[in-house]
Image 1: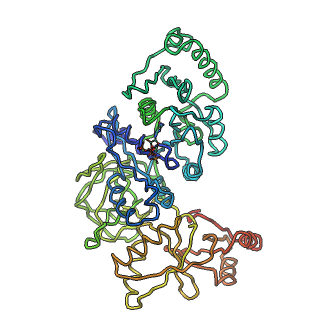
Image 2: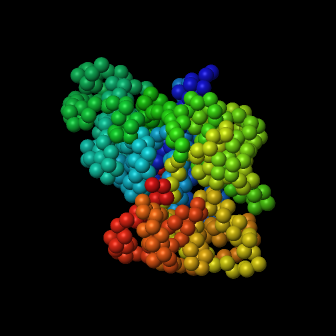
Image 3: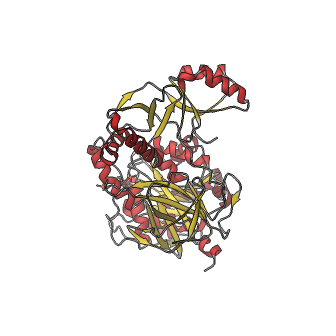
Amino acid sequence: MSLQEEISKRRTFGIISHPDAGKTTLTEKLLLFGGAIQKAGAVKSNKISEHAKSDFMEIEKQRGISVATSVMGFNYRDIKINLLDTPGHQDFAEDTYRTLTAVDSVIMVIDCVKGVEIQTEKLMEVCRMRDTPVIVFINKMDREGRDPFELLDEIEEKLKIKVRPLSWPIGMGKRFKGVYSLYEKALHLFEPSKRTLEEGVSIEDLSDPILDERIGETDAELIREEVELVDGVYPEFINKDYLDGKIAPVFFGSAVNNFGVRELLDCFIDIAPDPKPRETEERLIDPTEEKMSGFIFKIHANMDPKHRNRIAFLRVCSGQFERRKNYYHVRLEKSFRFSNVTAFMAQDKEVIDVAYPGDIIGLYDTGNMKIGDTLTEGEKGSYKGIPSFSPEIFKEVINLDAMKSKQLDKGLRQLMDEGVAQLFTYDLGSRRVVGTVGALQFEVIQYRLKHEYGATVRFAPVNLYKACWIESADSKKLKEFIASKQRLIAKDKEGKFVFMAENKSWMQMVEQNFPEINFHFISEF
Ligand code: G4P
């Protein structure tokens, strides 16, 4: 098969949702349709259960599960689907953001009872930054949820994206009878008792009397009216608008009942993008280019401290990746050969010899890889687009064992390379501050520093609001600013200057007083 054919067969995507909306359930159903698993219950939720929320040992155990389910590859209708899992716990949101840089599209699950929730909004912001195409699946239609039109309005308003329903529910909760697929022009009836993979009834148009026969006259009239309204209110579905991230097609269903999942998958296969060109610092690289290139978006450390090897997840962006071939590591300006290359198929890992654009492969690494690193066949530009966001919680690292400062430095560096947290080193006095999205990471870091590196630390609270990356077109002004605020200037792990703002109102004042300085809450601008 040609490289072009391999590329057009691939769909690499992620499922995102607020916890509990049904991401795990939908993932499992998709794997069932793809024949990758045989029975329900095989996919472990990567969610951290309520009682384990503050138990980081439990989280460490779950890291084992999450590496196994990080990427789930399966085939459906001759298409190779790579489904990337995202952490369910919001403290690991940064990990989710990075994973989203490695996908070509996403499916967003929304609970029809709860509507758009906070985590959904944050994730959508990340999708919008890269114009990632989004399909919305409104789940749990077997429950008494909100009015579908109201839900769609809320999605448009809160997620700031236009929507286009491609299916429409017939009733809801106890009165839920199924959906009419506007995409296939077919009626899919819901039989909660059967829980089988449903077959659709094709109808030419909604005036077909079969509709009245199957769902009764009252509901038939209602669906006719509602679909007319949908066609009148929402623009016609144009695939390009979806691919450009301007409009999100919407499906309704009930994942746990297997309902609406097949239509979603069939439509996904038709409309979702195959791997597209991606930008490096130097140029746009087309996936069909013969030379291999790709980037690391995730690193998973071995849980066994005696074997400190790690798995680096590479997204192949162009050409063909071959095992045992030499690849150029752009940041280190060095060549590497990988003999242990794994692909992820549903629940299993297998050693593979080749991989194509869109594929995610695991490379065994002994400490050379960092999130954001690029591998090529000699070309020097790095892939763009793995930004860091300003952390929410900050604490100062206090070394409790002066004899182990080398181990501490190494441990901190490696944990930061894995993306566990962000490290900021103050210009004055070399104080080190760790920033995270959630409180759990501090326990994880403390534990791992002790058990994997032999370094003992304590975290002291520091009062900080945000870390802002700073730049200016006027380098003299930037220098002056840094000199005047020296006490609050730190460097991130790349050596970029960061202003450590202590509180919001003061931050606003500084922004007003220094109009020539640009303050960014994201490391890439
Ligand atoms: P998440 O990964 O997004 O966090 O959600 P997950 O799939 O774990 O689903 C959260 C809960 O919602 C689960 O119930 C699941 O069974 C339920 N659920 C998923 N899809 C549907 C649906 O279409 N209808 C209804 N009514 N419920 C749905 P749980 O009680 O937390 O777990 P379980 O005991 O059922 O496994």
